[in-house]
Length: 217
Ligand code: SF4
Image (cartoon, rainbow, N blue to C red; front, side, top):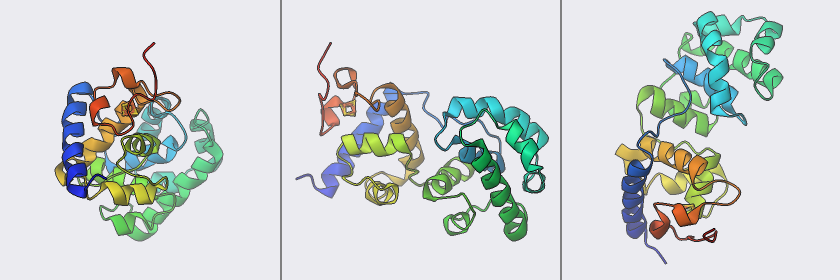
């Protein structure tokens, strides 16, 4: 049975190794301010980040403020994001979230977790990713890659994202929490992929409690 201290030490080694494996790891969504990141994160739910990045440049050029989105014509906005999965629902989410920002936060995206969680369409993952990447405030944003890879690594036994966040937060050094998420996302896309993880070529194989799930080809 691994102690919490042993787990923390293993996490430090995992981070150091993955930094070498994925030196380019960063948030895959393009944005230049917190509002743009919020819109991108709403669009990215169950949708590939690279596809979101093809839609947002025109959107960000047209809609500069939360008020711009809040008063958008829904049919027009739907058409502008129609390449994105669930575009009708996401149109409603964008308008609801930005209307809330206008009515409650002067149109600004707040930089406090409890305030972000009040915003419609913002859950803990979105809030933590926003805080980390738009404001530099540490936190663990649990997306499907972070959930899957941390589970396979034996860092959590939970499947609920909020519980996974609670498991990871105390064992990942605060200074590395934002980077840790990016590293697990890249590792999850490239090596520890959903269907069959590429364990034989994994740089953290020896640090993983569940190595060699796949056999060398
Ligand atoms: S050894 Fe396999 S299961 Fe573990 S992190 Fe690497 S690819 Fe994923």
